[in-house]
Length: 557
Image (tube, rainbow, N blue to C red; front, side, top):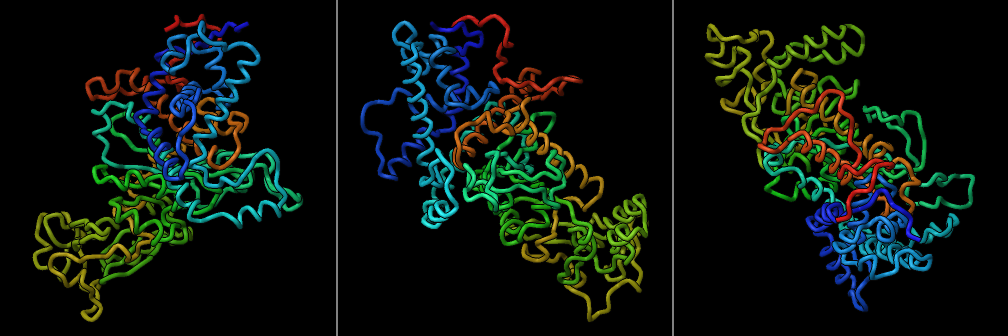
């Protein structure tokens, strides 16, 4: 007998989920990749197509339910109304057996086959089987036989497909709101727990998810996500969120997955690849914790991202807050290029603060005083470099210098540079001798360079701190039970790297959908003017506002 289901899935809910799948274009991607792999569709039509299975998984994700094959089967066998079944292209309840034990077993098998059929063309490690734990020797043989070219192709496919789904969920936000985005983004890496048992030295067998790794908290991660001091077996998800203006929600716009600590900067580039490849997408500030800036390798992170059009904004470790580079006479300190005549006590602000010579207030005063000596960006160059102007030149001059005629005009609020501060003639670089500007290539001082607000100024804090808080919030919503619940491994029972990446994507879709639905519920986007959230408003979990567990069933669609 068909149990009485009080959480029916109607046609409207199926339509909303299917719209995300359709807008993402992932069904066509899968068909194309199967063709590339020489695996045509062939045979009889599938009972559960790629589109139907992906739609069911989006429904489960946005409901906040476990991403289980049985849960997808239950939508078909019990929860879907006739209207929902019709939208899925399935027979009505009076035209097919959905409730007998044998029928439910068949529908489970069909759903299981469908989800694995979707994963096959994007599976980085198709040689892996997850029915048992391999011995360490068996796993080593499998890893040694992997084809790096195949892994790279599959990773590209996986990144393309998962981010297409994520971006399709963002497009539920009104165009009038999305068009106001200036390109500011924030990136972070967060652990996603994998199997309970990791691969240990004591065991002769590897973990049931051997392509995960041990997660330990890094010192270069300056956010608080509850993982301090913990060591556990996990994947690492890289998330990128867009910083929308005027009270609009900040959606996740990119994801990537890897082992903890494994090529984090390349994974961040993967998560942003669909943005950087699109010339029509705006590029603004790129904010990240110290894992990215300054601890990335310039040739892997800072230089490519500046060449892509981003302005990097980050913090500095306490041992790198003095002079970090010199070029053409300019001095880099705090990530910014400064006049060589800047007083030594301002150059030493970071070191003196670290040594306890000055307190927090004195440190803040020195940081603010340094801004007068900062070279001003005159023009950003396509290759990531920039033309800088001496702070004593131009209408926006902030210092008066003996080397610059007319820079000491009366009535202007400028800091006076004395003759004794000016470099000797033989030591003057182009920043002092060029009358208009000096070009500093992207490679110079790339590790620490920041072209945004001067480090630790109020403007820097405004550019850095809200995005960092936002991405930590997105991490939490993605993993906590009150959000997408990916921190609970029992909510996603299909093992393996590729399945984990798909579940992270579905979790991101759910997070975005919840944020956007709540925003639209406040009237945001109706006239292009976002409405701030009411005080003490709770975070909605289900994008479709499903009835509570004990509420009467909705009318069948």
